Length: 175
Image (cartoon, rainbow, N blue to C red):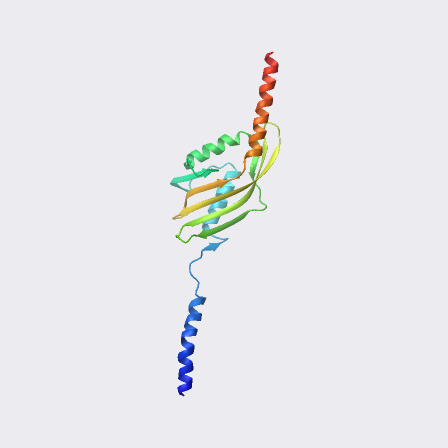
């Protein structure tokens, strides 16, 4: 009987540790969440040129290819509207979209997405595909920060080329 009692005393702590190890803590990584759904809505709104800022906190900051000089949500809309004038069509394709939500060690909630942007210049019909990474920080269900990173170089060079050609044509006509 004493041996049985010692076995039970020995096995109880192991069982308790095993049960404790099986308990899940808070979700720190997921590919399905209300925050991801919000980001998908932001992307859909961009694609349809529905510039709705209701998902953003009043004090949100947006950074595109920089860590300095953030844009307010209204300034970000103005940025997109100005850029839209350069394109016959533009948007994110449905293929190769990846979304994840993470909760950092500090308790911050971020949604990351990797997308492919496609656009056709209005001036000459040239098409571009650009990989884009966006990350959004959420507080109380609202976006408080957005960071966007992509390489605009091919598009900028093409726009400069178009501008130079137009200038040359203007100069030839004035001669």
